[in-house]
Image (tube, rainbow, N blue to C red; front, side, top):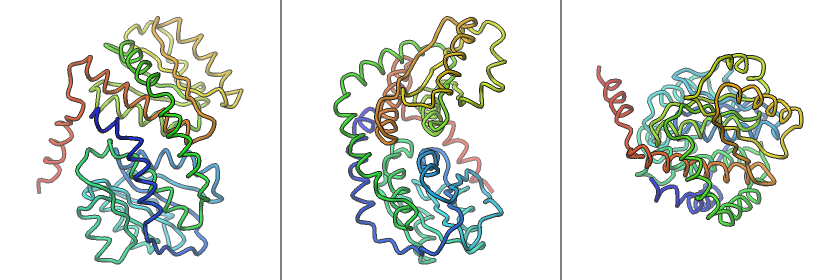
Length: 327
């Protein structure tokens, strides 16, 4: 897993070239919505892209993580099916339902049944490199989503420069990222982890949680400000020394959300002596995103080492897939 995370910047660069070179023929008639269907390591890119695109597009982008699709999917919908393996059963069912609803469909995968289905039905298809755990291929799938939206004339290509700046930031912060990741992993050891962030970064918080779940083999949850300051904050009513809150934020966040974050810290520190602050570095969305992904990916593998775990192994998920394949 460490080699895969080390290769993340190169993967993003390769993904940009794949996106630029993809020969996509996508109808550009007026859409009234975009739906991206994907789960796990293939679906998290959709959540991260949605946090970005919904601030820029004039139509909503919905993320679907289900066997079924929203009833609103119709001929005016751009439906993107994303499955790294191409064999995610929920996505395979969803894309077939989208076809019945006559949506405009684009498929992203490394092969499998989804690639076969796309070719059979002459659907636009972007193939990405195979042979890796889906969660280690976030760069490939996430970047292709941006290029699909760009090809459909829903998003300008300004993300390219921001991504280049993000890669430069990772290179510049390389030593500091590893030092900070090791320090934070040491603090997280033997704790349940509560990831708190501000609105706009929920996709990143979910990615962090998922990496801690799968790589580190630990329990974690996340919540978002301001919403959680209307409910979960009240749950901090008694001592929870087994919990360590991880506060993820940027200096450029909306001032009222930062004020809520500071108040949350005051409440929580009464009930646990532990905490971690992650200041998300960067001047734009993709700088912040690439920095945070790289940092928290390294945190997850260093915590995995401290726990004596194999970061790649996900036997319980493999077991579930075998069980689900039984007739």
